[in-house]
Image (tube, rainbow, N blue to C red):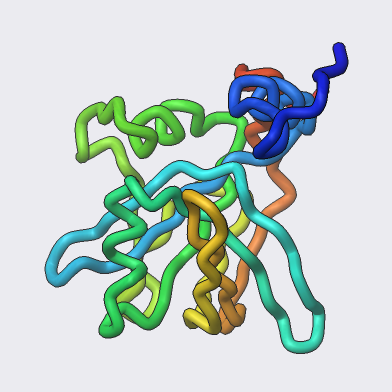
Length: 163
């Protein structure tokens, strides 16, 4: 399906449907908010640079995580790439929370991450770039670990598993 030119670009619904054809992993962006751990499901994660090791996450201005990451005293954030067995955590952190005790939190040097995920990254906020209704947060990766488990995949608005 193609869409005719639109004065401000293509309409939002068409944009969402088109980019929904790009399969992506599912991540939970995490940060510490005083004594509370916070998380947000996101599929907008991009590897930016190997040297230095930079990633980019895109966060909607309306998200609670945006308000948290915008604070100057919040200097680090985490990224956990969910495994195929963690679909419930994607739902939990996308606004339909289940029981908090089912979240397998673990801390790395005071930053919350999700246990059992395929990979975890700890990032120092490197740059925040306003971009339309989102902010792009560049993170300098200071720590990473990974497994060989299968990731949770998101494609055409639905979860999928490899295989």
